Length: 364
Image (cartoon, rainbow, N blue to C red):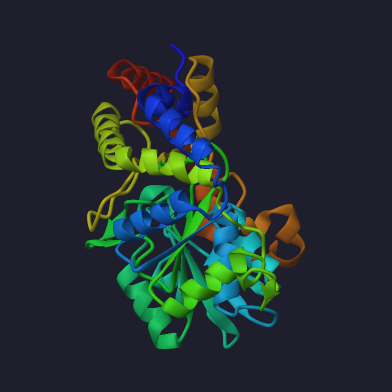
């Protein structure tokens, strides 16, 4: 049996008629950039997250870049972010010519903690990017309090966590900015690149809108050097359709995760940690196991795709190794050696779940 890591074709079979109708609506309108679909999407995401402002942009990476620009982060500033995440988080810091500072992560949640953050702070620290990895919020109350006490800009990387919360407060509503990716593989995915920034502050909202549109509020009057980072109407329309299904799809992911836990109970591996303080949306179902590479190979031989997110922590990436290669971050380094993500998506069948779990148990 073949089990892909994600099956977007199966998703399209569910929502395809709605998507095609939405695209036809945009085509007939003749309005393709900064139109009503994007504006409506911004309002709908802001309502979901529970903040007054949301600004759509070209990608999740741009969302991080725009947030740092809007916060005034630049040369001479340090920005702390976890070493165990995708490189886009650190790229955005480099784009504004600030200095990335990599901190360690908790071995259970794979997220930054207040303790690992505090160890990385210096007098030059101006901002913190917290990553809510794999679909579960980091421990936001102490992290937010630490940033408030130190006067630091708090940016949430919510690329994998739309709909996750801690004690009722959604990912993207804790910090000064929440940065979302709608890359096709995300729980809410476009059919191309797309992103969005949430904020509570009207001044940040105004700056974000200017920055994404060549630094302009009024056509041909450019107040700052901005970007071309406007979300097109086609992607906004697609996302609005899929947003209507997000809650149902999230419940299905959570049900599949619960079934995996039943099927893998007692196996020689570490199941995903769930803090119980809010919803885990299971962007990934990520295990830890000592013989990760052998297990991945055995799954592939049985037709089961799996993923390693991420095999190299940021401080050991070639682009950063010369500066940070001697840095010791044991939590991030151990995670990179041991993590393995199993297929999890709403359209998975019970037969597929049993096949994945049974194959993994057999190889262990």
